[in-house]
Image (cartoon, rainbow, N blue to C red; front, side, top):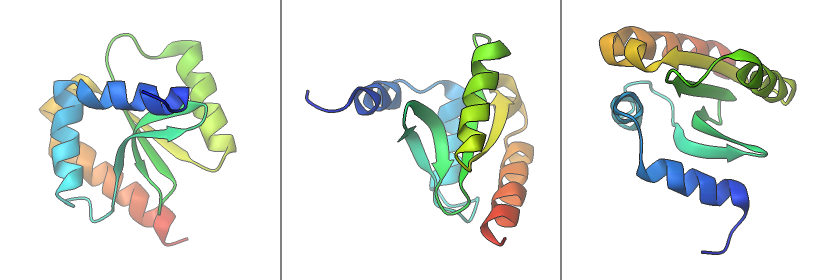
Length: 114
């Protein structure tokens, strides 16, 4: 399938979400967050789990393979491009979806109304 590498990667990630990503996407998609989010959105050279364009907010849902220098460098690059990055562990999303959603809404609201 033709397309840019980040779009092909986004499509591949779209097809196989984690349980935590699936749960958070269901909440975000139903507009419980009152903002429109995109899933597996390319922000070259990265593909982020969720992005709210209006608030320039990125939400990442991480498993055990994440953290460390690579994610710190990625976050710094996204922040330099004007994005705010929020990261949650898979277990946090599964065990406290309402709390995670409340946090996302609070940050998105503050950023959208600046």
